[in-house]
Structures are given as structure tokens and as C-alpha cells.
Length: 371
Image 1: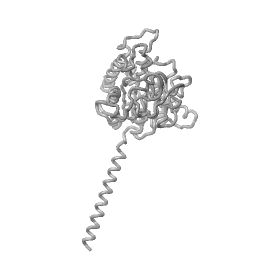
Image 2: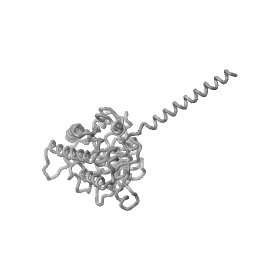
Image 3: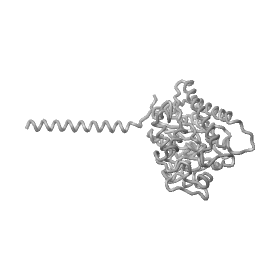
Image 4: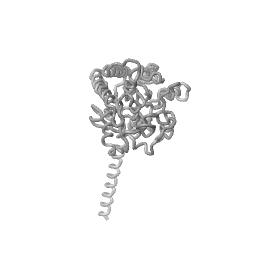
């Protein structure tokens, strides 16, 4: 009888041990995405845009029609892809809702349907914009300078608290439209590529300085991808862009900008006390996908899934006469300029968890957990 009691006690202790291990494992797993960051503020162009341009009267740079958004949201949201963007995935990793476009949040606050601006951050990005104030201005887009002013206005109006700013992640991705436009033939004289890139970097430095002065301390700047490889280069064949390979002159200019941008975020991080800046190496990450497509689930890394003409790069997705592929997320490019949701997911993971080849000096998860 005593032996049976002894066995029963042992069994109970073993069961308790198993339950404790499971509880510990569950707790560890659920806390893996808990960060010090509770909000994201995004600035830039169509890589980040969550629907800003749909709220701008007379803006001609739009993605508010099918089949944009078809793979995830199942309706167009104004995002220039078939699903989620990089800030959407970062929000998911952090465990917060996706950010609304600033103009959508502003309209909701003004009409009373929303009491306050969202506490999970705001997306200011406007497709077609650039670092240079004049880039695509005729299309009605919102420049980086205006995006920053919108944020400054919210702070001045006490719509965003200092505590929220201090516990937020700031994202900047801009410059593709500046460089692509440089290669579009015009009658106006253009500076040499080096001076043009320097003027872009000067605007980026102003942006970073103002974000710091407002109170931003965690800042991630993303390099430009290999812009000379986008399907839309087919529209530049008349000025020397090749079809069978990437446009080397354009990629050379992109690389000049990227080198300057990495030096810039390094320098401002050293210059400003408390600022923690990281540089995301999108260029090399995307080139890695292009070199080893099957490893990352791609069947096509050259053509747009949705569009028409050479490379699918002669017509915007959704416009009259467009064609669409059967498996969008097997394509690197969703449309003539923009990555598919699958590409965005891969990129976001590389930036969130990657090593120094992808993002440096450390990844976004580490940045989000800094005190």
C-alpha cells in the first residue's frame, strides 16, 4: 500500500513538472514579439503608402482599384501591391494594428467618428513622392517635407504625446522616384548624378535631424532596391535601358545614394545623443532573391505579375488592357514598380531578424527592444 502511494506521489510530481515546462514554453513563445515599441510612424513613397493618395483630391498616382489588395485584403486599400507592405508586417511582428494613413485618421477625427489619433502610430507615406520637393509634384503627391510637417503639426497640437514618440519606431524609405525621374528625358538641364544624389542626401539629413528634434529616437532608414531591375525600365528603352539585363547606369546611381545613406545614419547616430539608427540593406537582399529565386519561392524575378507589354512594365496594373498572372506571390514584382506581398514578407523578416548583411548595426527586433 505504501509503495502504491509512493508511485502516486511520483506521478503527480512528474505531471506538475510537465505542466510547468509547458507553461514556461508558452509564456516564452507569447512574449517573443513583445517590444518596447508601441507605435510606428512611416514616411516615404509607394513602398510604404497605406492609402494616403486616395485621400488627395486630384492626385493621379493611385492604387485604389482592383486587383490591388486582392491577395490579402481582397479589395483595394490604396497599397501598391497585392497585399501587405513592410510597415504592415512590422506592425504584425510588434503585435499592434496596421497604421492608418494620416489623411484618413485626420478625416475621422475631424468628423467625430474617431476621438483621437491612433496610439499605434500613423502612416504618412505618399506614393510617387521623393526626397526632393519637386519630385512628381505635378501628380499631386505629398513630399517628404510635407509629410514631416504633417507629423510636426500633430505634435504641436498635442495630438501625439512625448511618451508615445519616445516609444515609437520611425521608418524612412524614399528616393526611388527621384532617381527614376532623373532618367526620364526632359528639356530641362540636369545636374550630374553625383550632385543630384548629394541633394537627395541633404534632404534625408534634414529629415533625420527634425525627427530627432521632435523626439524620435529609434529610426530605421531603408536603402533603395535595385531600381534598374524593375519592369518599368521597359519604358526607358529609348534612352538606353536594356531589357535582358538590369539598367546599370540607374543601379550605379542607386548604389551611390545607398552608400551615402548608410554613412548618413551612422553619422547622425554618433552626432545626436540618444538616437539609435539602423540601415536596412534592401538592395543586396533583393539581389540575393534574384540570384537564388527558387530558394525563396519565386518562379519569376524579372516580369511584373500584373501589367502589360515588355516585362509587364509598360502599363500599370489595373489599367485598361492589363494582364495578371495566376500566382502573384511567386513573382518578385507585383506590378511594374512594386514588390509582391510575398517579397514584402521576405524583406520584412530579413529586416526584423536579419544579420549585418541585411541590416546594421543590428536588426529591427533589437532596435524595437532598446530601452
